[in-house]
Structure formats: structure tokens, C-alpha cells
Length: 306
Image 1 (cartoon, rainbow, N blue to C red):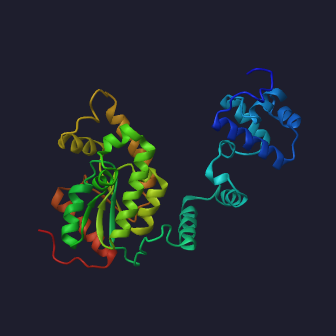
Image 2 (spheres, one colour; image 1 turned 90 degrees about the vertical axis):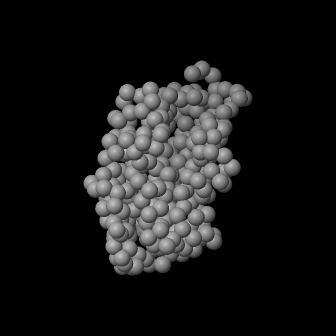
């Protein structure tokens, strides 16, 4: 980086915002620029360029600055959960909390805030919207249609609803507008399904759990069921549908799939119920699903599936 303080140089919006946050954090700590530069072990000119939004620091320099400011990299980078004193105090309370208490805290916050989206209908204690979650190939579409027929509920394939709202296919959404736009359409489709139906079986896309806003909608407004399967079954079922893309040109496809499963398992495990769809044939798996769902929503077992 140049040793000159480039006040009038063109500023990238991200770097300008980063500089403003560093200045604000320094002011909050009551530190002079000279004191912060010394604590971070960088030159004062280097720090000045950073604060003016014309310096492009390495990640290690930024780490040194945030350590000197006693704040997280996330706070310096503009994480939404660091934007106000209340956010920061909530983060401090939750920082070293275990998963069980984090779960209790999330439920309590949801109860305090009430329905997060205007127009969304509150669920009865026994939720009658059933959302099937899990990676592609777990059996959400096949089992979901059978379950909807058994319960007399509408069946919603959320991927088709996303395409309807967007007016184009999912590959086209991602190619034309990117992953972030796809997630926004996914969220809109999930919210629309909740608002339109008090009773439904919803098969969700495999990646929905990776979007906190969409996943919160599922957890708060649906009885969620995680359909699990072995990596081999996931791969084989997708291939049986005629889609060879997961394996095409990728000798490490199975390891990639296992990595995705491992990465999402912590989110999928938040579901109300879970069922392994690899352990038994379709008829037996569906009968197990209908029994646990009927028990959860208070409908009883009714006639056994033949």
C-alpha cells in the first residue's frame, strides 16, 4: 500500500463502509489513530488509508486491527448482528451458550416477536402444514405426494412454486440472476405457501435449510420432518431420475455429497421429526412416515396403509 494518505482517490463502496466502521469502532473505544496503529502494529498512514476507504488491507492486517479494537472481524465487515448496541449485547449473552439453550432462546425470541410476516397465519399447537426437508434424493416428492393423499391435504412441490413466481426454471434463475436471487424467490414461495394453506404437505428444496430466513419460516409455521438417507441412496435416486449431473465429470462426487450432508445435518436436525428412508422399502417407509406425522398432528393412525 502506498505510504500516502489518498483522501481523494476513488472509493469502492465496500472499502468506504469498512473504513467508516473502523473509525466508529475506534471512536467507541476512545483510541486515537496513532494508538490504534501502534496496538495493531501497522503504520499510521496504513490505518489512515484504511479509515478513508482507499486502502485495501490484507485479511491479516484487518485481523490485527480488529484484535486491537477488541472486536470481531464480523463487526468490522458489517455483520447485521453487530449494527446496534442491542444486537451486540444479545450476541454477548449467546456467545458461549450451548445448543440446547440456543434453541430455547430462539423459540422465546420467536414468541416475543410474534408472526414474523404480516398476513402469515398462526399455526395451531398441532401444526397442519407438514414440511419435508432434506437433501435431494431423500424421497421428499414421492413420500410427500403419498402423505398428502393420505391426509387429504394439498401437495406443494416448492421448487415448482419458485419457478412459477420467477417465471423461469430454477437453472435459469441461477444462471441469469445468481444464487442470492434464487434464495429470495425460495423465501417468497415458502411464505406464499404458508399464507395460502393452513393444511398442506410441502416438499422443500434441499438447500432451503441453508437460508436462515426461509428455514425459520419452516420451523415456526410447519411440522418439519427431516427425511434422511444414505449418501449412496441420495446419489442413486437422483441418477434414477435421469439426472447424472452430480456424477458427471466429478470423480469425487461421493465425497462432495458426504460433505454437503455433513454441513447441513446441523440444520436439518432442528426438524420436529426425522425418518431414515434408506432402512426399508417404500411401502414400509411411507407407513412409518404417516404414523409419526399423524401422531404429531393429532389425527390418529386411521386405516393402515396397504
